[in-house]
Amino acid sequence: MIVETKYFKINEPVSLESGKELKEVEVAYETYGTLNEKGDNAILLLHALTGDAHAAGYHEGDKKPGWWDDMVGSGKAFDTDKYFVICSNMLGGCKGTTGPASINPDTGREYGLDFPVITIEDVVKVQKKLIDFLGVKKLCVAGGSMGGMQAMEWALAHNDMVTHVIIIASTPKLSAQSIAFNAVGRNAILSDPNWNHGNYYHGEKPDKGLAIARMVGHITYLCEEAMQNKFARRFQDKDSPDFSFDIDFEVESYLAHQGEIFVDRFDANSYLYITKAVDYFDIEAKYGSLEDAFKDTKAKYLIISFTSDWLFPTAQSKELCNALMKNKKDISFCEIESPCGHDAFLLEYETQTKIIKSFLKENSYE
Amino acid sequence: MNKHYLESKGLHLNYSIISNIIDSGSTVLDLGCGDGTLLKMLKNKGVHARGIDINQDNIVKCLEKGLSVIQGDIDEGLQEYPDKSYNYVILNQTLQSTEKPDFVIKEMLRVGEKVVVSFPNFAYWKVRFYLMFKGKMPKSRILPFQWYDTPNIHLLTIEDFHEFARNNGFKIEKTICMTKAKVRKSIFHKIFDNFFTEEVIFVISK
Image (cartoon, rainbow over all chains, first blue to last red; front, side, top):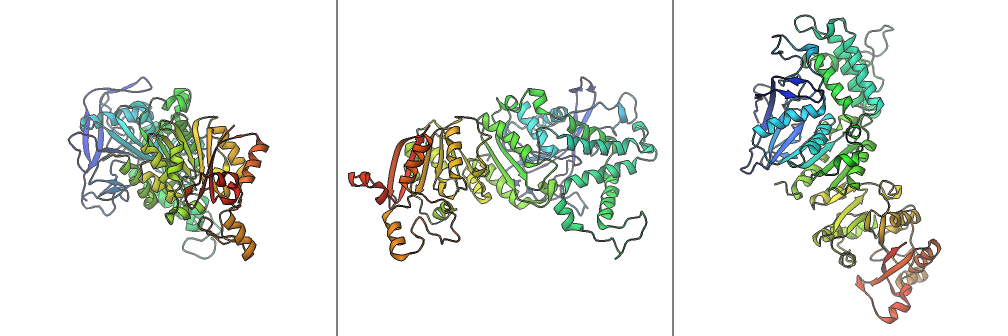
């Protein structure tokens, strides 16, 4: 499936939760499948921290497919023969949607730190404008990790439109530990001399800081078992240590590589803004309690967690489950056995496919 | 689990009887709901039903039937469920497989206004005779396992359950005795129910 990223320009200012406003917002998005006449067969996929609009298929000439290609396509979990599947890059991102690396219409230069601080609510607000533009009337929303937070926000903010909510490896609020990891990542960027208060778009970039942020992040996406299975204590291209501070272990080499490839595809300022939006996300704080928050929602919920995910552990998914159950919502929950850590939502596609297909099928989202 | 085995053999016939006990419009929590056959039946008659099961394949089967199902271990209790949050809590053919049956029943009585519980009666005459004449752990249609691989770790009798109810102060509202998957109502059965009943369904409350 050859696909291409399209762009949608919002022709009005977008006001943000912080009280500030963005004059111009452009949204990068992709769609797969066809919207039916009633406009009620749409599924919006919501990407995680560093994802983009390219969820499935191949871009012309690319060797690698989109980030959730295992799950999206003909006959797959999100079956493009039946559904109109949409994915857009989030506000504040750096993959085509307006973010800190975009040009500020007021100055003619990149926003940098002039970009307003955004929240998950703002992200969803922008997505809603795209969804309306596409003519969608009823919507299933699905996302893993931060994508799951957006799915929750969708259910809360657009109760009349959202019929099905799929929340995978996510949480209604970050734990102190998760915020701490994000803080370390941000500090790595902020302390890189090249960061220069966010003004680096015309010189050296804060690649070192961003790479370290990615390394920290990556550790949290795996788990002890996954790392042990993958690397154990093996040395990189040698049999004994160097007695130096160069890379000795395979795991070091792996993290360094993850950092290096990340800086080529991601903007350091976007990383700051997006991790902040994730840290701020807290449904309880906003609505008083989880129960109160979801009281009036009408959607059907599917919540999935993974046994080895210690970043957003099962207990956090269950907290959400319990709030929904107390509200007598139609909710199903599944904890998938996996050794893959938080990343499982991108990897364990076979079990997820079975579960999601069943959920969409009989709940007559067809 | 015993129940899953029975389901796979198509041997589970008390669903319609349990379904008849429950009024449409009521709320039901089915513990160890298996593949969701009973839940689906209940849902079709307008019951707001939710299931809990530990087995992932069963979760998928329930989802395929459009049911609301939560993966979880009932031996860990129902602490997330508020008091009296369901009209009925059902434990069908699973009591004898739980690690802490007394705890599970107490939790069910806390969460549900009424509890429906069914189990194979270990005092059924064929079971007694099996042990008496063969001198081996009884095997039957609804107790098909070997002693070493059986999930039925807390087998009990109707009399045991009556005693349990007395000791714990809950009320038996209804007793349905079944043999060979049929409800037995004769006087004979009533008097000697612990002897002639293969499987029993109790409706209890606190």
